[in-house]
Amino acid sequence: MKKEIKGIINTSRPLYWCVHFLFFVFGVLASGNFTSLTDIHFIFPLLLLTLPYSYFIYAVNDYYDDDSDHANSRKGGVFGVIHSKSERVKLLRRSYLSFLLCGIGFSFFGIKALIVYLILSADLFWYSAPPVRFKAIPILDFIAGGSLYGGLMYLLGYVTFQGNISQLIHQLPINLIFILVITAVYHLVLATFDISADRVQGITTSANVLGERVTLFSCIFILMGSLPFFHTKVNFFIDILVRASVCVFLFQPKIRTNRIVQKIVGEYSLYLSFILTLLILLISPSALN
Image (cartoon, rainbow, N blue to C red; front, side, top):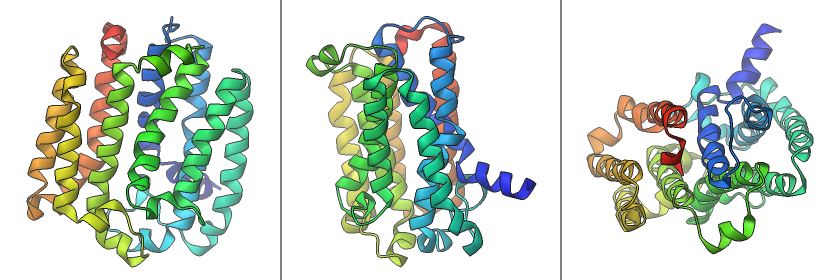
């Protein structure tokens, strides 16, 4: 029983739960209705976005990417479980139950929250699942698995806190533009680490088609092109410059293929972002808006 519970938790990638926190919180702050960290309207959705919702996302991903995961040296443990055949059989059934549980939970926050939840879930499900499988369609892979993922999670926080949709459409918040940019780039960079493993399963990601160097150049172009949006936000401006610098270093094959570097860029950098965001949220929430 303990082994099974551990398998369920590891499948949900607990060390990635902080990503949902980041996206959701940015949306909550943009709504203009955030009042307290202890508000049940804030805590309950975040709890839903940890184990139950992450299990839905990653169980589907693990089920359809089993061959690729077994060939990927980055996979294993809490960073991405490699399942046995007996474990794999249970993944989809449990993921659907997790999806239903979270859907019921978000329905209590109104029809807008439920609709955004369903669109977000459809995006993440079809990112991995055939016959759509966005992750195997160049350009759509980093849009669906990057910008839409982050943007819709942001929107979920926004509508959960009764943000004005018309206002959001007419004037995109700076922090939403920031989320859309960094999620696209993050997805592309990680895809350069997984090129060999993805080729095993015939997954034609953008990185597979463009190659490592062109993909990294594209990331730098996206990042530097977005800088004018952040000239009034020093923290976002510096963050973008740091990410562009990392992409420059990754042009070197020895650096890009180093396992420690891949862990720092792919996982540990997320925890630093989480800690910084949490500190700013406690000290000066307006800096994230």
